[in-house]
Image: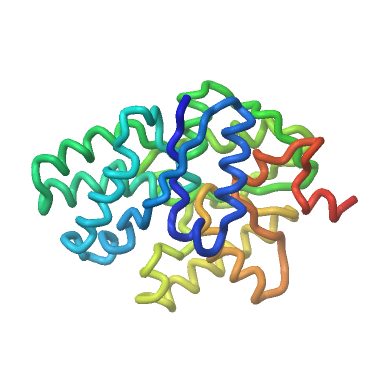
Amino acid sequence: MRIGLFATCLGDTLFPDAVKATALLLSRLGHELVFPPGQTCCGQMHVNTGYQREPVPLVRNFVDQFGDRAIDAVVMPSGSCAGCVRHQHEIVAERYGDPALRAGVAAVKVKTYELSEFLVDVVGTVDVGAYFPHRVTYHPTCHSLRMLHVGDKPLRLLRAVEGIDLVELPEADTCCGFGGTFAVKNAGTSSAMLADKLRHVTSTGAAVCTAGDSSCLMHIGGGLSRIRSGPRTLHLAQILAATRTAPHPVTEAAR
C-alpha cells in the first residue's frame, strides 16, 4: 500500500523517534511511504480549546496534503490526532467550511488510521516481527480508547512481541490527566490524576510504560522523572519497530 505518514506536532517537535519508528515499521512490512512536506498541525488543540473556526486553514491543508487518491491510507502514531481527523475535522468543515472542504474531509477521514488499528484491521497482522525483552505495561490513551475504539489492538500487538513480559496496568482505562490544554487550565486536577496514574505504573515493576500517544507519554514521563522512580516511557511504535537484528537502544544498554 501507498501510505501517507502524518508526523503530528509533537512527533515533529519533541518525539521524532516515534515517527521514525513508525516509518521503519511500515517500510519493513512492505509499504511505500509518502511524507507530504507541507503537512502541519491537524488543529486538535484549537478545537479542544473551543476555537472551531480558527483551524479551518489547518483542516484544509490536511486535506490538500493527504487527499491525493494515490495515497491509499493515512497513518499516524497518535490516537488523539487520528480522532481529530476522523471526527473533529467533520465538525469544523460542516460549521465553517465550504462544500469542497466538506467533500475533502469526508474522503480523507475514511482512510485515516492510528498505527495499531491500521496494523490489525487493514494489514491484518499482530505479529510484526518485533523483539523487546523487557517488562512492559500499557496505558490505553483516552482518545484511542473512547473516540477511536481501538480496544485491545495495541495489546494484541504487544503480546506478539518476542521476549516481552507484558504486565497489566491497574485501572488502565483511567485518564492520565493530560488532556492537552486541560493540564494547563486545570493544573491541580491534572496533577492529582497524574499522581494516581504514576502510582499504578510504578506498582507494575515494569521497565517501560508504553502508549499510542506521545502526549500522554510526555505527561506520564514528566511525572516519573520528577519522582525519580519507575519505568521509562516509549511509544508503542518504538517497541514494534525493534527487532533482534536492530534492537531498541534500551535493549543494547541492558546488554
